[in-house]
Image 1 (cartoon, one colour):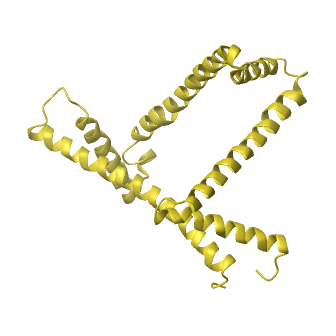
Image 2: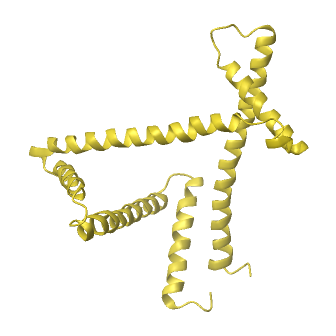
Length: 213
């Protein structure tokens, strides 16, 4: 920290204060944690207000309002949403809100249909031995695992037939496949949180306390 200016040192101390405040929740809920949480939420909200203002209102509407007349529709809808702040005419905000909810639902429905449905179906419809029988032994094993996991997983969700006998055994294989998948997803989430923790601990001991060179 020797090369930092006064404001650099000040920023490091503020960051350390806020970091320790957040982790103080591990002991119990306390005013220090509530203060740091409020600071984080307030700064995040203020940051996104500024970003959205300059990216959307100024960058898209104000700069290009003459080139794209359709932007006026978005500006009018945005202005109508602000009517929520006036109690007597707050009902006007329901119209643009309904339009935004409907349009966003339709957009994300298509995105999820493509990413969560069609792409997964495409990934399971593959040549077992690769194109031109050029797959390696490891690729063939991976394709077999995908085929077995997909088939047995679908069998598990087939509730029109009682899960007994060979059908029940196949469904149990599907359960194991689902458990392994969920476990891997959970492990990935835990590791991503651990990387954040390691980054904060490294900041505390390296940048703030200077115990690690």
